[in-house]
Amino acid sequence: MTTPTDWRALCVELVEQLQRAINDHGLCLEGKDALMFRARAALAQPEPQGPTDEAELRTTYAIGAEARWREGFPEAWSLTDMERAAHTAGLRAVLTRWGRPQ
Image (cartoon, rainbow, N blue to C red; front, top):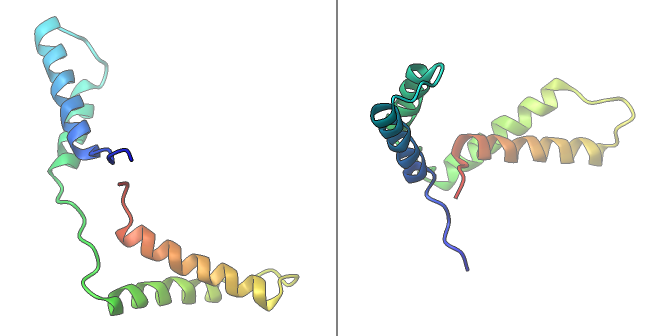
C-alpha cells in the first residue's frame, strides 16, 4: 500500500525551492512575486475541519439535494432520474464542504 501524498508539505517544499532558485541564481520568473504571495497565502490557511457530527453531514446533504430539486429537471426525466440527480447534488455538497485530497 502506498502512503498518501502530503500535498501541503509538497507545496511548502516547492515554494522553498522556488525562493532558493530566485535568490541563488537570480532566476527571473514573470509574476514570481504574485505566485509566491498566492502560494504562501494558501499555505497560511488552516486545514479545513471535518464535520462535527452526523447531523451536520445530513444537513449539508439535504441542502444540496433540495437545491437541485428547486432547479427543476428536464421534462423527459423519470422520477428515478430526478432522485439520482438530487442524490448526487447532495453528495457533491458534502464533498465540496469537507472533501480534500488524501
